[in-house]
Length: 233
Image (cartoon, rainbow, N blue to C red; front, top):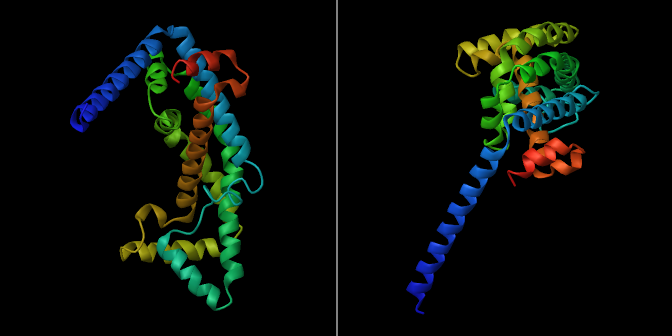
């Protein structure tokens, strides 16, 4: 067999294998009962959300986690570096710490809203998420809960950041920077900025938990998770 024949055969084999795998995946998902699909996903949603809230709602849940730690936005981060050279690093650190503490205080308030989203999920939602990517659950949560959670988080964030004298100065400087096109409009208010970043961090961590569940459902000690996500492996 010459190289061209070998290459063609390899490509044909790879294509057939891919087609068979895709069909097997589709059949296994289609064979799931609506009850199993819905129940399995609800368990995953609840476990993923609860784990994310538990991690982020603790001291240093945001501040100690580089993946979700809330930093000053672009232009102001550059300004903060300049402040540090003039011995004002302590004030910058105080502001950044207060931003992250505000997020840590707000996140536990998300649980009721997230659980209501789970209960309102349709069967089609469930099967669509199961067939989606590794972060389909977090995307579902973001679509269903970002607006109401933003309303719940904002007062908590406002209260936490108001304790730091730099918060008002942040808004003044950020507002001016926004007018000059140096900063996004939504980042020009510290309370709005921290609220948005808190939600980003929450959905990111839910996505991280979802990946773990999809990769190893058995580790979560739930037979329905094993059955549902096992069909997708």
